[in-house]
Length: 207
Length: 201
Image (cartoon, rainbow over all chains, first blue to last red; front, side, top):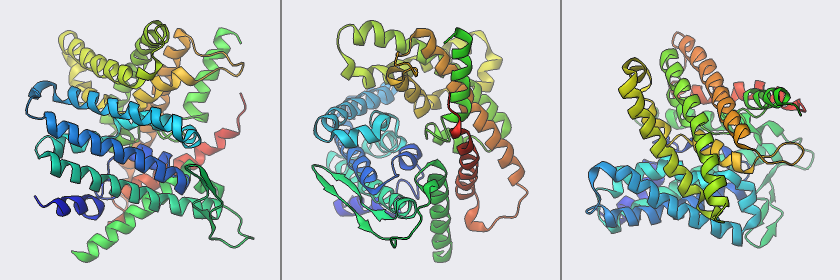
């Protein structure tokens, strides 16, 4: 398969969150601010690309019966690497994402792509698939978190970006009264629910 | 705190104040995926309670006597997920051998539980959670926390399944059917559970 076709496939046509609907827990939990969402997206993309490459490499020597166990060990190893790197280099982000970094192990997107794509394709196209799916995941997280942060806090992108602190874009006027519910749990469900309904409307119109 | 006080504290926290699904965002895939019918929701819920309790107990022992003892805490993620996967497989085999009726009811859901983030979540939380006085969880606390968290998950799952069964007869716009209305319902439930957050225990 064409490298670029595989790459762009994951971003829009098979977007992991809006179209395949996998990996809901991190999407809802870490989209409180754009800053958190991008951090989570990058961490998940790294694990996705590395595990896809690794699994595509060992696919011919893995017995069929224990393949899921092998995938989980590979994924868990990369997640541990990401977890330790984030705790060392971006401690604030690591603290605010908390338990959701180790929980990348059980993110259905990663195991799903390993089973559905990397175990059947070459190393290069598996890498493209990992990058595409990772970008699609990050993009969807950014969209959800933008809505939540703008409605719930009135800003966009506020927070520590690596070593730099950015005050964020003040999207809403200064007398805007933030809707706290959008930063908390209810807003996450409502935002994603309405976004998915919007996607359905677009899909129905096209067909 | 007395022993029973502790139990009530934990039960209230896990069921209402810090509900696993609606305020911690764990175990959403089965919550949205298996809540279409009440019978399957009951099966899934029972399986999750059972596995969460066992996993909490066993992972606590592994964490305390192996990982902390040899200073290997960084291996927690790998050790816990392998333990859970092995445990689920083992439980499946035992149930299949000893009680075919139970296996028929729970069988399909057991393999799904390995990748349910609620199970890994509760095990990881047990290593970090503390009592209000700063003491970390012991073996019994961890096991009870697993049980009550599973109960909290099942409680919300059953409520959701009940609502969704009635929703079958509602006339919805085409674009709202399925996942979107499920998520919006979950949002309304989370909004009502938000009221419990004011409790100070």
